Amino acid sequence: MAFAIKAEIRDLNAKTLTFAAAKTMYGGKAIAEGDAIFLFASENEGGQGLIARGVVTSVQAVARKTGVARQTPRVSIVVQRTAIAKRPLGRRELRSLTDWNDGQPGTELNFKLYRQATNKIVGLSDEASAYLSRFF
Image (spheres, rainbow, N blue to C red):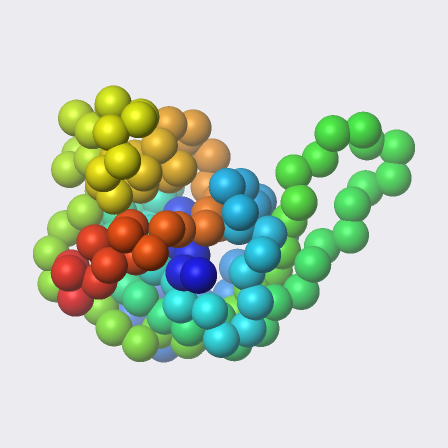
């Protein structure tokens, strides 16, 4: 299974990126060392969407806070960048894909990454992963 992370990415040229206490949604908590991950620079922090692909080199679950009933699972990960995106893909390109039940990979990405504004790690279908691979 492949994953995607939408997060603030300050250094677009970094070969190794660290993401501390990232929220996980839509299967994102299953992320493990060796998994492929697509990196989206969050437009909420001035990013441009899909910027790179990488491999997860470290995963550490973040302990839940005591006394808080509902918590989104969080993990800290380290990613080794393996490729830079050659074409743009972000909120602007995916905005029109809103038929949540059409089964299209672009719609899956719009739903998982942009329906809610939060930064997060999400699990991807094989179709969405293959679709994203075409941007490299």
